[in-house]
Image 1 (cartoon, rainbow, N blue to C red):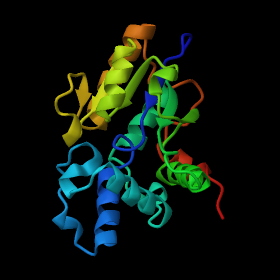
Image 2 (image 1 turned 180 degrees about the vertical axis):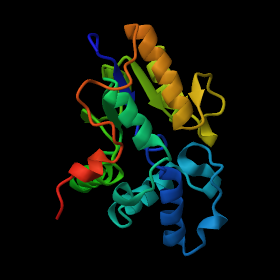
Image 3 (image 1 turned 90 degrees about the vertical axis):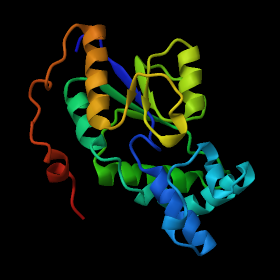
Image 4 (image 1 turned 90 degrees about the horizontal axis):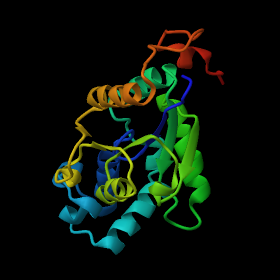
Length: 216
C-alpha cells in the first residue's frame, strides 16, 4: 500500500473483554458470585457501587493479583479481523492507557505482551498512554466515551466499539469485529483508493501464526 493507512486500536473493551474479566475479579474480592454484578454498566462501574477510588482499588488488585491483562478473554473475531486488515497492509497501532498505578508497570507491560502473543492479535507498534489524540493515526477504534470525544474534537475519524456505557455516542459504531472490519475497509478505500485482500508473498492460512510460533 503506497500510502500506508494507520489504524489506532484500543485494547480494553475493543480487543479484550475487560468487563467480564474485571467482574470476575471484583466478585472474588467481595466473595460474591459474578452473576450478582451486572454487565450493563456505566463508565467506572458505578452500577457496582464503586466510586472512582473504589474502582481504582479493585482495578489494581485485578491487575496485580488476578493478572487480568494476561488472562482476560479476547473479544470474538478481533484477532482474525485485525490479521486480515494487517495482511492488506493496514498498520495496526495498539493504544492503551494501562499504566495507571505506580509500581505495577512491569506487570502490566509483560502481561499485555504475553496476552497479545497468546491471543494472536497482530500489531506493528504499541503505545501506553492516556492522551490518545497525541498518537498519529488515520482512524481509531475505541470504546471509552472520553477518548472518542477527545479524538473527534481533534478532527480524527473514530469508530465506536459498542459497549453499554457509550450508547449515546454518534456513529460510526460497530457491535462486533465483523462490522468494524467493514467500516475500516471503507475508510481504507477512501484513503488509498484500493484494498488488497493480502500483500504479495503472504501465507493466507490463518493458522500460520500459531504454526510459526517458537515452541517451548
